[in-house]
Length: 465
Image 1 (cartoon, rainbow, N blue to C red):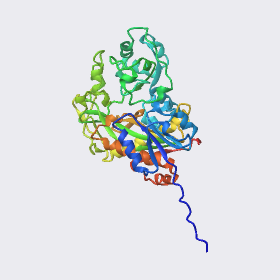
Image 2 (image 1 turned 30 degrees about the vertical axis):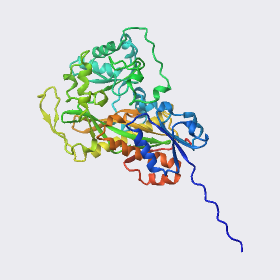
Image 3 (image 1 turned 180 degrees about the vertical axis):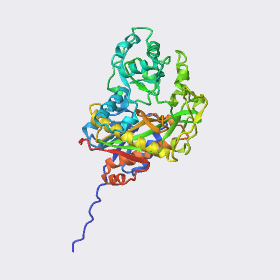
Image 4 (image 1 turned 60 degrees about the vertical axis):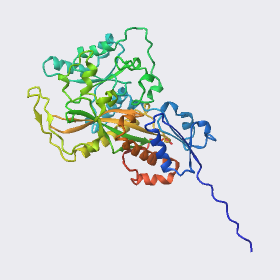
């Protein structure tokens, strides 16, 4: 009788080569730990260069800075290579593009949540103050606002945002044409000999974590030449919801994966302004004092001095269940008078629900309405940082507004005390976006809700394979 021979062991899954070089000591070890947690040691190999990949068809994970991604590799092997950024997403991360994205979408969708969750403003292009008047010829909303102010109907405040700026640089407040003109006069270069940087695809790289020295920021005014072209002016959100008298915004981390699923990470941050809030009409924005005066209005912690950052970053879900009384800010009432804001104990959950709805719709608006400027890939994922503000409407309603979308968010602003938020995020991202790409069987776990703190807010098929 013939003796049965043992069949050779079946080969295990092909090794995954992981190039993880995020160039940020704050987040790099968190990414590595998350990847090593979810992949057995025998299936994952960390590498330091693409030269370490044995063949172009090998399974590859690139988790690096945008400028370092080998997109040729990525696009040539859609079933084997995965990267941590889409190639094109200007429709979301550039302020003037985002404004157009929302404007185009709400025209076609009259029931869109973006009608209430976004302050629609005006976009214009200008290089020098002397050309400002020409640039505002079609800015009807601004001119009508100024006209109402001149008639004594009350000053209406606007916030000016350079389309290419980041980390709060170049943001100003104004209520009249004269104030806006002074802002641009302060930005005019001392010499006309400066070369104007051309916008190229590298400007799509990031919008939140750039190094000031690398980007060539002029420390004198917080803005660089290439940013002085595209601008967005939006109605200023006033009054905002305050805690301990200070304004805050909500930083929400969002995962977009493939083409296209979008998730909101439930643990969120509350980032507070350096100083107690005062109405813009009571703030001195004279040239030279503008930067200091804005400290009660801007909640970007990267603009704060080291001593001011203490207590400026906290967890959104740790905010009080009860909203304290708020200043009235009414011109015909005592400035120190406070009013009670009617609210439910679930106000934070209500805000989160609004955030989820706004996030899902703005990504769909970009994907369907601005497909030239937002092109999700089936073999890519990306973490975005979305900023939201809670405003108080005249009837006391709390309304959440989207402020901006940031690529490659600056996780260092989270600080050490809230580092667990970023650690948990990386764990969720690997489990939801990375593992299923290399192991199809794990997709079912993600779809059944085993993705921890991530809440799916959008799932559409853009037909990209």
